[in-house]
Image (tube, rainbow, N blue to C red):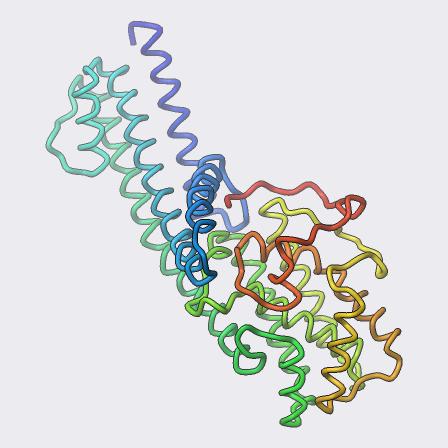
Length: 368
């Protein structure tokens, strides 16, 4: 290194490598939701591009087809970004350390990264050190990517299997009232605790996988009218209605399912920096008004489902449960551009909590 330009080239090259390694480690190896600058920029940039095409689509089905490609193509874009950054970093290093001209430095960098071997490093030991280091980084990224993709798709498959099972109970799009009516019609009210327990486990896995593998948040269901977030909302609403409105024995499984559910949604919201009140009061505003609850109360009663006679008390209890997940459910439905479902995505874009309710804790940044 004979000039200030060489020193700057080395510094910039090392910085680029540090950014790439930070992004690779946080994406593949760190078992928690930690987004790097590179990952965030790629996913935000891709979301802006896809948002333009999705807005121009006239129907939801068309928007869903567009957004179905967002997560997979963003992963591809992230890998391509890493590749370009590594190639650029080692081009700078080869140029500064081995005194190769820019063309030879780029050829040596490309040959080393892709392990092509058509360019032999020059200028002795440092040339070989740089070439081996770049080849090692390229192979490591490829190996981690190969191991990473099956994990993503196996987790996605488990999530969607449960979502599909819910469709047989709650319909498509899912609906909490339909779910409770069907269970009553086949005399399965006594089996609701088993359902709450199964979804408690689903929420626990959701919180772990969708923060450590946050791209899963944007992987869409095969059926455009199903979504993990609207399914989560339906189960939470059904559990809240069962605890507040139905004249059936109280179920600790339902209460635990509700807590597991809103905690899972909050953890995902934390990753994406979405606002919510972490400690709402039971009488704080929610996106559902009393007339909508009264309509549901009548629908349940008309279908023969046993409801509690004190409607006012039922409304207060339901609102007291719903306030724990109301804003975070709507925020995630809006973030993922979820399909239509009552009491979640049908109001996710228009509803905003009052300013005084936006007292959430500091949030971690994330892609998307």
